[in-house]
Amino acid sequence: MTTVTISRDFGSEGDSLARSVALDLGYHFVDKEIIADLLANYGFVEFDREYDSLMGFWEKFDAQRGKRRELMVDMLNKGIEAFAVHGNVVILGRSGFSVLSGYADVFHVRLQAPFQARVKKLMKEKNLTHVEAVTLCEEGDRVRSEFIHGYYGVDWDSAHPFDLIINTDKIESDLTLSYIVNAVKALETTSLKGKPTSKMLEVDPILARAVNEILHCKMDHSELRPELVMHL
Image (cartoon, one colour):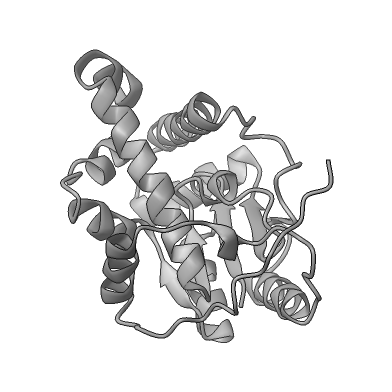
């Protein structure tokens, strides 16, 4: 089994491609709605709304929530880990690449496009003026950058965390899909013996059951939990 995380620049093609990747691989698709459903089970009904209300995101969280913000992000991290342990999932956004960094059975994809290309796409899709699209794109980039850097200490513009980076302004969707699917299939046949994998993560049984219910899947896609011997 493998987990795929797909991160994307604000306004770049990501949602539809991620769904297509999941469909082609026969994996579960985990997006913000699925993650929001999981968090809602634990009382964090406002995370998705706050994350998507771009203007003043950090100001509102810093001034009003403090500790609760940290609890929500901690629950987000545990949820993403639980989806990975379940197996055979494509996780779209929500810092999946940071949470699951360093595991050999997780494939990290970054979809990006030049700023002006994303602005034009937003103008067309949302019927915005150029100024409105620029403002929306800049704010979307800011929120992603501050969230990732603030909680995971990762530079959003860094290529280091990713296994595959694709410019969706130059590479057509069908070819992008092919690149990702073929790379994941190759990883599925690669020996991971002696390497750290997401199957080593400890997941609360109640959380694991909640993931099964949300995905409508009780199958354990994981293999036997591997033993890891660390040589320091």
